[in-house]
Length: 378
Image (cartoon, rainbow, N blue to C red; front, top):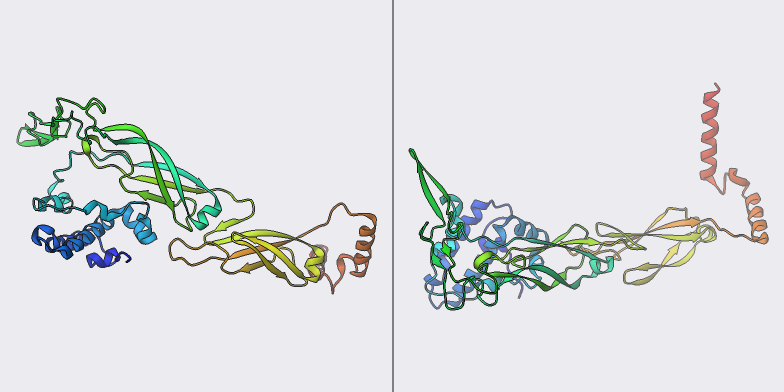
């Protein structure tokens, strides 16, 4: 069963502002929170949907990606529900609404836990891979949560101790005359805790540098300069803080045959002037194989032929673009004597370049040239 529309889950419009989204989330979360609905699985599932929708729509970049690609923007193994699998009766409502009221009351209590850095990975793919989609395996150097201390930074069996300078708050207050100034704690540097027995693997950082291998799903229809966001796949935060995100920056390599413009593909198809004059049928390439293209008689060089449905399927609305073939009449080279003789005879029968009946474009051009010089000599 497909996921519900995030805007419908929160009951807001697609143009809703940040405060409207926060207000809708607060109202619904208060109603369906598991602490207020003990044993009610339906309420728990609704709360998961509400939380998932809120975390996407309240984040400007996630919301933009969702508006552009829908739920497909988060299909790279980043199931949003995985974050909300368990709830306990000790859940504190202030934890849930810390992000809602943080901007009003000057920040939440998690402010001193620094999120890991976001990472960017530049990925080059072929046009075929961009059009059809593919799963790519990548390897990135990054910081990951220490598996020995599970991100705490302390030795097994020990715990961080509350900072005696700031008493666990991460900040201190200094009185200056009539004013009190709030500053970062110089002892714990806003962490609120001090590690006296650091983990011997990560040396108290809670993370280690390593290479991480990821499978990235490239959706069909993606194009150069598109970005894929993988939540929590960036650097691990210090001392168990949330990981940053990983951005996959896409560049589609130049193709030897096709050029892409939005969802249409273009290619040049050379034909000889006999085919252009008399017409016929040629075979042209597509990304799905070869197709027949009928060339009508008296086709001029540069004429564009459209083959519908042979372009790129849009990553946004799934509409299929077209393939546009531009025919180029090729001048023959390496002519033998007989071929030159035949062409001379053809030229005579056409009355040279002034043939009104057979080459009207040439006639219009040279008539225009004559009028131009006639005007100059008046």
